[in-house]
Amino acid sequence: MEHVRDLRSELMLKLLLIDRAGRDPATLLRAQRSILAETEVRLDRQSSASSGFERTIVLSRLANARAALSFVEALLDQSPGEPVVYRSIGVVRSPHTSLEGMPLQPIADHAGVSCIEIGEPYRGCLIDLDGFSHVWIVSHLHESTGWTATVPAFLDDEPRGTFATRSPHRPNPIGLSLAHIVRVDPDSVVVAGTDLLAGTPVLDLKPYVPLFDAPGEDVVAGWFEGRAERVFERTSDGRFTPRSRGTLD
Image (cartoon, rainbow, N blue to C red; front, side):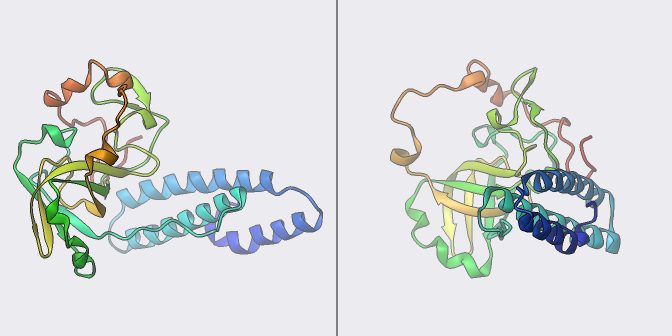
């Protein structure tokens, strides 16, 4: 089944027939998952290359494809069949307007302070945050598109497994940045040291607590050992094409 609009009718009918026959639907669902995953990638690329109302249509189809994929995956693992949806609670206003030359981690950022503007419904959540020195910024890396099992790591000269990197090129482009709090205003948080583009949607803020966040045992940094220091010398380059300039093949 290649058209998402056929999912509700045709897939449900097939699942009904399989159930009545006493067979396992896993094979059908895995095949459907594969098709939907390919459809998601294709529509994601189309959305980056389109504009105007055409892009609106593509984004609608992309949303339907992702919801259908979530439904099929839920059937496979028997979890509640609801798509995972998060709303932005704010947006980053930073000096970084382009991926080119951006710091790879907040610790290497010397471009000045950034501001996290918080949406009106969520501003009350800022109460008491001014008592902390640092905050975790959970963000949606909106200029990232697509993913691969391995990525060309910024701090190394060979591909590394995506989950063993901090690359933005991942199945769910979620960013995690630790920033120093300069001040907390009624509608925003001013921070020093960010590795986030201006306009990045913020999903959540969490206070940094050393007892919780700093491991008490010895830490092993994997392939970063002997390479992490390069973060002060290297900056973002063109290895990951931003969504606004098309997709990475």
